[in-house]
Length: 175
Image (tube, rainbow, N blue to C red; front, side, top):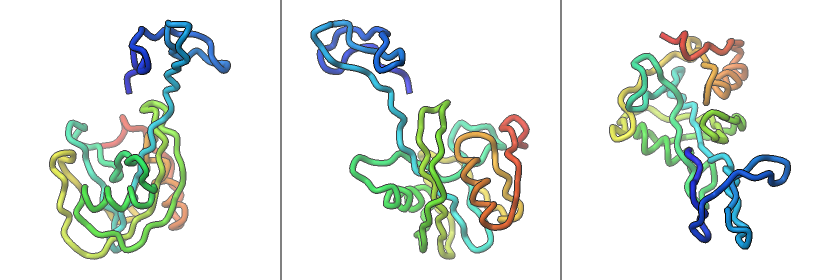
């Protein structure tokens, strides 16, 4: 996310100043207390398991060989478990049967805090949300390979619970 350029309180330009031991964007008007904290955005991620397979999705605009977990932004006031349920229903059109917390992961490059879950769904056909996603693939659990960015760390940790020890593959090596 791009940083704000103007104060959200009074509209004056922001400038970089030391605040709480870090350089932060603060209002240039000394009578205003506004600080742009640039806190990470909470994102929910779902390792969607259907039978002995995992459903991976491809966002519009991604390279043809990149697939990842179902993800989405947490809505204001929404519990993360409700958010991940909503995202699975919206993005792949399947109803979760069970939802289990996997872990929290910092995705520094995107300034996101990923809240990852393992979501088991019943039988049914994937109905892709085509306004956000361009494709999906169904991968047997034993063939799932975690990647070294974003949600890939959650995949690696979840695979460990299934007895699979996998190294993270750099994104540029995924084909």
